[in-house]
Image (cartoon, rainbow, N blue to C red; front, side, top):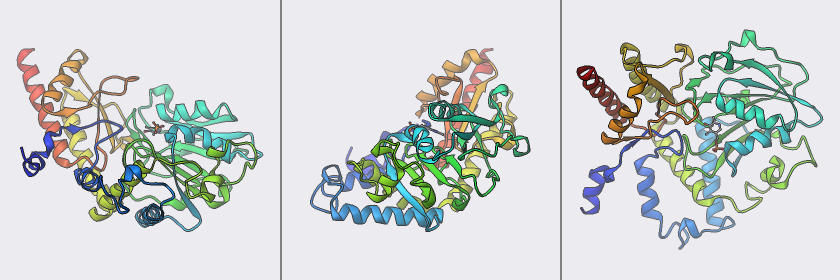
Length: 373
Ligand SMILES: *Cc1c(COP(=O)(O)O)cnc(C)c1O
């Protein structure tokens, strides 16, 4: 097959429903291929120095684009770090505690819990709300939260990637308590008001690029609260002063994030992609809800637009379903190893055709199973 024919055939690619690393826009992959041998400086991006003035110019344009897309106010810094969202689980308490000894956390799913476990090494964690007793099938309404007045910040996870629950509201806090959000799996999937937050962080590999780079948006008054106690790499202030180059950053991954943001801006940005995300997730949830063959256990008002976990009424058929779906070129539909079942991750870059293909496969499988049983 020549390259044009391969492209027409979508390069033989499957629809990839992986929760992360996840599917990237095809245009982005094509651009990477096209530019790989000589980026803008006579060298491949893989061979480019983080000190190259051309790369500085490029990273400034990435930041400017992100600031446009998210309407980030001037008093916030934008960082591209390594270590994943998991490293932020430690960096947030290390940087934000200052003289305080306590932080508030919402326990709304498995990722929240991991953030809590890490923070517990550095401070006393006050769990202000907890949906673990009902197996994370809903989000606790804010009226029921118990917020102590001595906390350094309040942390929550805007979208629980494993459990499939998503906040469609922002918690209200006294102005003295910075709100910290792990937005790894729904950043840029909808417009949000950045000014309501102290820190926003997100590993890139769900919605904005490949694994290896982590976006951090931090308000200026929070970058230097704990002056001496932190490893250099983990100090927001050091990373701000060095424009995210305190050590050699993951240049290639950062570059790809730039391409994804360019793709998103061309598409129309978060407001436009939000409409698509509503449409895609509604198609899938509506299909699941009208069927008595498949089900989703999350309270409707708390369901995630990004990650749709589901089970078969007859759980013994699940592994069969997964193998049939792979035959239909629908991959990585397995639920997280800690919860089992199935999960379809349908981030910004998943086309609606992918969701329709999944629903068609689910329908075929249901019909076949009903004939047999
Ligand atoms: C994937 C994920 C993480 C962990 O991200 P890493 O980049 O692997 O450290 C943390 N929080 C949420 C909500 C996630 O979806």
